[in-house]
Image (tube, rainbow, N blue to C red; front, side):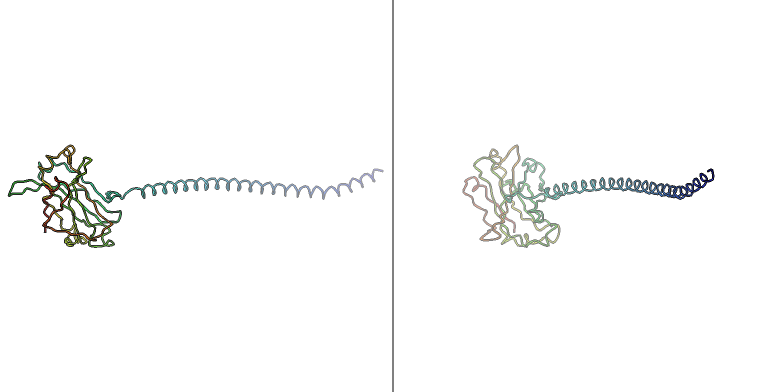
Length: 264
């Protein structure tokens, strides 16, 4: 009887041994799988961290690009640094204190003004001219073309009619005007070869006494406003200029003071 039990036990042991071996192998494989899963999880964490960093970096880059675009738009909407442009109506106004130029006896220079971002570079100046014969003082106004950055791509000579005026500040608008034509001024209106061309100088633009007597019309707190208008619609068409005859206006005041003399 005992022998039978022993044989059965041995038989069971023989069957259990392979099972235990399989269990051991499965346990070992499970540990390997678990280690692999842990490694995959660690890699996933690293990938997520890297993705988050890259996403943050991309967001920062995008913000930088947006700021740059905004800055570029602002720059485009602004005139070039230090660049003064004429108004959309093709005018430029130069404010001058008449007492200052009388007392200092020195010319006042306007800032350079450009006809466009890549246009002609111009300037005005104002001074007092004393006629030695009759001891009469006149407001003298000069116009000149300066060397500009874009002169090589511009058309020359400068053939656009120019009108200089001392503005009437009342509603009457009886401006004291003088016209400059390119036809007899080709030397001064060609492309500047140095810093500037020769100056177009109107010595007797208007007598000082006339401005003082009519200060309510032409002066505001002792300031007069000199306007330069450029007619870009008429480039040298039907423009005449007589250097011995100043421009005549319909106003009686202007007729009496329009004794301008153009330089040769």
